[in-house]
Image 1 (tube, helix red, strand yellow):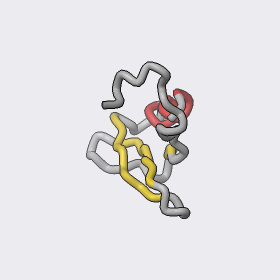
Image 2: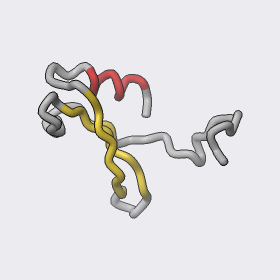
Image 3: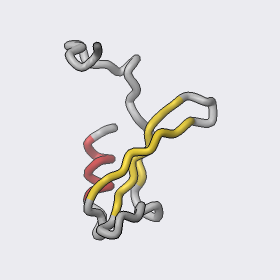
Image 4: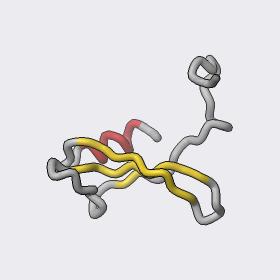
Length: 68
């Protein structure tokens, strides 16, 4: 996910954190969805949600340090 998406989620007035959900796209490909969370632990589904991830592969780091 890009920095802009993360900042948009975390900048919401009630947002105190973020939750990551496993999801599937319409074509069945696995992905993640990011949503803000309020102080009561509830998802801020009416606000900013990030659902367009940069999957690895093909968008992987050249260093491969975290791939084992």
